[in-house]
Amino acid sequence: MTLFGATGQVDEPLKTTFKNMHQGYPKETLMRFLKAREGDVSKAHKMLLDCLNWRIQNEIDAILGKPIVPTEFYRAVRDSQLIGMSGYSKEGLPVIAIGAGLSTFDKASINYYVQSHIQMNEYRDRVLFPSAMKKFGRHISTCVKVLDMTGLKLSSLNQIKLLSVISTIDDLNYPEKTTAYYIVNAPYVFSACWKVVRPLLQERTRNKVQVLPGSGKDELLKIMDYASLPHFCKREGSGSSFHSRNKTTDNCFSLDHAFHQQLYNYIKQQAELMKAPIRQSSVHVDFPEPDPEDDNIAETIESSCKTMENRIGLSNSLRELKINGE
Image (cartoon, rainbow, N blue to C red):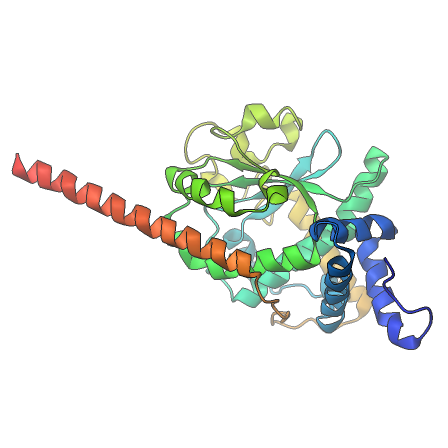
């Protein structure tokens, strides 16, 4: 798959950002985009060029030199956008933990959350993956994600727009970076929605998602050591990620965790190297248009949850009616 012209200064920015993106593995990167477009070379070529132009237009290559300041504000972002790294799988894949149920996204504007998410993506690709390859002695360019659904409520529908933006950015610009998604601590509201949404997903995506019973500890210990388990998988019973708001070194969501300390220090060091002025404002990134299929899925989730909400409301009303009628 030919990406650039043979010569010409016009192609130089594309080559530079592509180099930053592939980190020495161009063929593997091309294969990711090809896989994301079901083997269609023409569509994969367009997807990659769109991605490279998006990186250039939004200065993604420099985003790791733009810290979110002041530190206490960044802590608020971390406390409301629960994501972190808990360790490595036995195969050497970074284990990314996500507190999907308790993330509130209510301490900053959407631009800060998008900036933070992209910074974590870039840090994963440019720092974590090369470090993992050195540590485990093989090519590593994917991670596994463990999503904690503790605390998930119907009110989480208010976050669908932001989550759709983040999901679309990942789908279009960081495709095939996740080997498996493990869902843990899933309440009824998630289970009911999943039954509706699962058939709508592409088979390639559907096969990556596993809904594990309870905290998922027993199943996850088959692919990672206990030390790499996210903190919410180590505690049995409901509400196992309640401690996500506590500032403990075990909590990989916390800014005090080693992973986030290393990430934040790296970003500040990059800012110093670039001699770029540090501004107390977010980086504005163009949001790509969501895939129509993603919109359909979001609408289906919303519709299903509203139906459930009505059923729950009706059930409660009938229960009250019975109690009052006794």
